[in-house]
Length: 348
Ligand SMILES: *Cc1c(COP(=O)(O)O)cnc(C)c1O
Image (cartoon, rainbow, N blue to C red; front, side, top):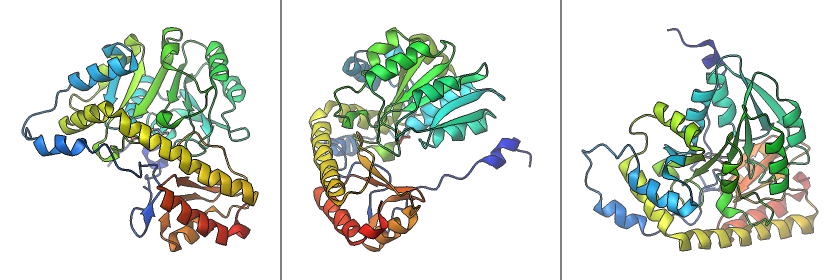
C-alpha cells in the first residue's frame, strides 16, 4: 500500500522499559497523583456519552488558574497531541523547523510526517544555543522549538535570554516553548512566559498533566497561546480528543495544588541527593530544573551504565551519550546512588 515516502524515514517510538525494576525512565511522578482522583473515578458512570468536546469545565478552571482567556487554551491527548496539531497546522513540505539537539523527539517526528526539514542546533554547554538557532532562521523556517527545561538535559533558558530571542525572531516564525516540567522549576530567573503572550503574537506555550500532576495514563495536556492562533488550531482538532474522565481528573488535580507542592518539594530534595553525590564524586552532570537528571557519558558508556542500574532493579533512560534518571522517592534515589557509587569508574 502507498504511504507518504517520509513515513519510511520515521523510527518507531520505543517507550521506556516498564517491567523488571523500579521505573524511573519516563519522568512520571513517583508519588502518583492527587488521592482525590480516586473519588472521581468511583463516581464516573456516563460511559455511553461522548465527552464534552469543548472541555468546558476544565477550560474554565485552567483559564482562571493561569489568568488567561478561555479561548487561549487548547487541549490535547497529552502534550504530544498538541505537538502534532501544531505541526500539522503549520508545516508544509519543504518548510523547516529549528530545534535543539538533543531535545524531545516528538518535534522532529511530526516535522518528518509533514515532510518538513529539521535544523538541529546542538546545545551549547548543555543549554539551548539561541544565537545559533536564530542564525539558522531562513525564509522556509516555520517554527522554532524551545524545550524549557530541556528534556533530556533538564537545563533551562532564562527570562532575559528568552526575551532577547523573541525580540529577534521574525514575527512570522512560531516559537513553541514546551514547559512540560515547569511546575518543578525553582530558578528565580526562569521565564514567566504567559505574560509574554501579549507581547509576542508568534509565541505558544505547551504544558501537560502527565508530569507533576501524575496523570500520564489519562492523556491530557494543553497549549496556551494568542486567541487567533489557538482558534486556528481548534478547527483542526479532533472533536472528542480528550476523554471525559481525563477532563474530570485534570480538573480535580488542578484543584489539589497541595499535592503539586508536595511533589515539587520532594523533587527538589531528591535532585539535591544526586547533586551532593555527583559533586562529591567529581562526576560532571547537567544542573536540572526538572524531575530528572542527565549524567553525560563522554566515553559513551550510557547503555552499559543503564544495564548496571537495571541489574540493581532500576529502569532509567539510557543513551550512548549518557543516562537520564527520573527523580524518585528518597529511597529510590539512595538505591540508584549506591549503585552508581559501585560503578564510579564508568562515570565521567
Ligand atoms: C512528557 C513531555 C511532554 C508531553 O507528554 P504528554 O504525556 O503527551 O503530555 C511534552 N514535552 C516534553 C518535553 C515532555 O517531556
